[in-house]
Length: 184
Image 1 (cartoon, rainbow, N blue to C red):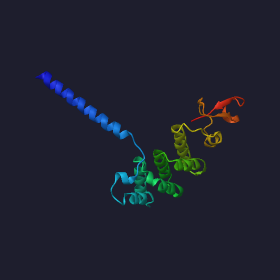
Image 2 (cartoon, helix red, strand yellow; image 1 turned 90 degrees about the vertical axis):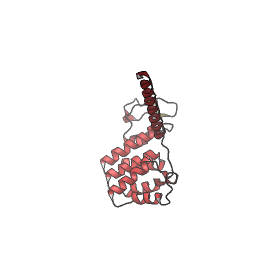
Image 3 (spheres, rainbow, N blue to C red; image 1 turned 90 degrees about the horizontal axis):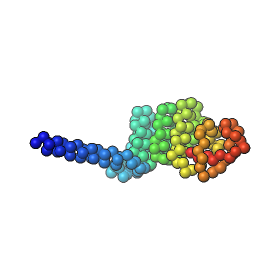
Image 4 (tube, one colour; image 1 turned 135 degrees about the horizontal axis):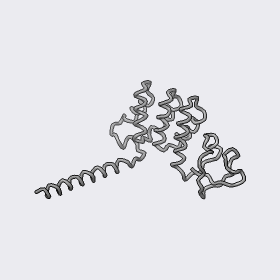
């Protein structure tokens, strides 16, 4: 009797672990999606965009967070428009993270601009970090050394690759006569 009960509890435990594993694995593969694929409500996108442009900071933060969390690519233009007029530094960083999760190339170009021209040092630092992470994740692209210098990234470790060869900058700490291959 004890053996039968033990075997049935082991089977139940194994089934529970298998179900949890399947749920976690299927949830972790996020892709950009259109809001119309998730909601049948005809005004869902309009409501989310209105929330992104809301005067209420809490509504604006929640809308931006949801757009980034669920990777609603339809909201990319609204996020970029809000990023240009946003005064709150925390919300600027949140918009940058939402655009990063969407893998938005236009958004990353805007973050690169923010990394150099925003008046808030925290926004500059976070924008630079998000943009750097974007370049690392898209490592099939070769970054321009001048852009690196602008963002203060020339002191990073040089990774040898076969993508592109650039002369080492004078102030990078590497010998200027050798050729180095840069790639994020």
